[in-house]
Image 1 (tube, rainbow, N blue to C red):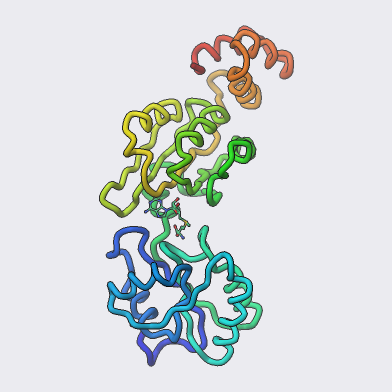
Image 2 (image 1 turned 45 degrees about the horizontal axis):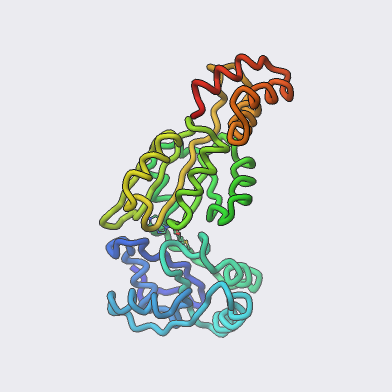
Length: 285
Ligand code: SAM
């Protein structure tokens, strides 16, 4: 147990907070939040509600994306003067698609001790229940907001063999899944994990072609906070057609008749157009 006597001073504590279910805060997090001199928070009003729920009176200090570089220096000076500070974000683990990087790096450069507490994090929570390989994975932050950025990102990860994980906004989920279908094809397994730890928690894993249909069946499935997890690349050994060629065919068929797309792909990759045409008939809409 950490109390005011055992709290390390000066130290910056990195403190995860719940991603939905308030029961997911740890005893150690509550002890640190109660006993530090200041809590640096992404949104002091939001954190104020959490603190009042747990009857914690520690004062807060605003540290968000727009002021972090400048305010981090103020916090480092407080630490160097002997204070202890806890860093929290609105939800989950600070620095994971949240502010905190500049503060932590400035603390480490100044020789200030940084102590991380383990706790809630949407990417790890989603991965642990996804059923996708978890021995190696790559967290890619937020899926790009614009279609061009999304497609570039998907082309970059199309042959990555690790599970790739993105945070996603509910406003873009339909378009994002369409872009995934176009670049990765209908057979790639994708898991949508939404509203984790909350009442309407849903974890659905399907081949992309089916996931696109599933999400359109009920608008509620497009709501809330989301994590998208993509199964790593596996070579399509069954067809014997190189994956680059299958991906090109999948993209070209959006603009051209299958016959023409197959002929062009065959020419580019020096393959038999009939085999590509047959694969297209079996695998593409
Ligand atoms: N620092 C947080 C963490 O440790 O997970 C992430 C902060 S980021 C600004 C917020 C994004 O995380 C959301 O848009 C969503 O993609 C994901 N997220 C947060 N809470 C979630 C939840 N309960 N269920 C699913 N995704 C969640």
